[in-house]
Image 1 (cartoon, protein in one colour):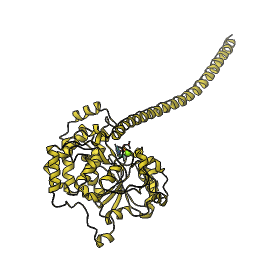
Image 2 (image 1 turned 30 degrees about the vertical axis):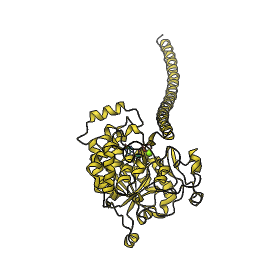
Image 3 (image 1 turned 180 degrees about the vertical axis):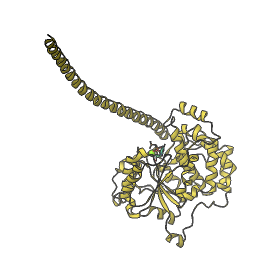
Image 4 (image 1 turned 45 degrees about the vertical axis):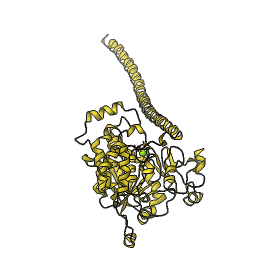
Length: 436
Ligand SMILES: Nc1nc2c(ncn2[C@@H]2O[C@H](COP(=O)(O)OP(=O)(O)OP(=O)(O)O)[C@@H](O)[C@H]2O)c(=O)[nH]1
Ligand SMILES: [Mg+2]
């Protein structure tokens, strides 16, 4: 009896174990599958979020640009307005500036012509930008730097990882320096109300309006990158942003060109700024100029940034994601004092002043106009615009990979047409098709 019960029990136990075993196996498989399924789902969700974000931001930016482009076509920003008192004062200050302020190395004597050029690429990036900056730099090496071997300076508000550094060193022909931005160059100065800044971000309805880091970035690029100790030994820089591209070979030494031709600031793309991001920038600039008329160069390029002789800003600026310029310009008294004045006014946080209009206004007012240079030959892309040489000889010589029809320079929303006009430069053949 005892044995029979045991057998039965044994059978029951075996059966239960078998069922549990099969159930467990199924459960295990299902769990694994569902883990995979949910990992996939999570990835989809993240991807969709990123796509959605990118699409929304892109749509918003596109709409804002479209609207601004229409306004540009309607000539909204070009109407003539009578001069007000402050504009008159600004103009007379410019006329009265007897001595040109000497900024940087403006002399190109034979000695300096033969001296070594102290120049570097400068790139502000995050560790997460690695894949994009690698592509950009690889292209920069192929198109330009494999011949010239200029060093790189990478700056970040966080420590660069070892992976970042070794990946960069792997693709370049020259030295790379990696710097951590000091806290005081990437934080709120004590005169700024963080509550007010936060409120602005919550209510701002424009691209990057809600971003705190974007504002620190713009303030840093305006007033601090050139103060970084890693740049102390350099006179010249070329700014490099991730996801940008050179379309053409650049066979000459751009820095040498700048130095030997007495240029201080070089650009490839110019464009109009979103007015809503810089509402008080021009009034603040005018107030600064009234205080310091001595900094306005008598041969300034006011007519590039204002259509009414200084009364209002026409929103034109050099797109600063590409810049080849002399660091000594930013180190000059004129620019330092200008930046400090703007910084005190708070517009980097209470509005969303970009480094592009800040740099451009300074260059247009404090430099003699012939020290600003447009590079029609440097084929360049930063989404969504291209600088693609319209001149066929340049396009062929540079083995350019861009379509000339996609050039932005003479499209209505660009300011390069105006740049040619105010400087009385001959426009390249084919420019007119962008205006019809
Ligand atoms: N280290 C660091 N770099 C940043 C940060 N935000 C932006 N940057 C860099 O600052 C430069 C300008 O930033 P972008 O986001 O390209 O700004 P933008 O060109 O106005 O806008 P996009 O149209 O999105 O390119 C780039 O070189 C970025 O890599 C940040 O928070 N930390
Ligand atoms: Mg960018």
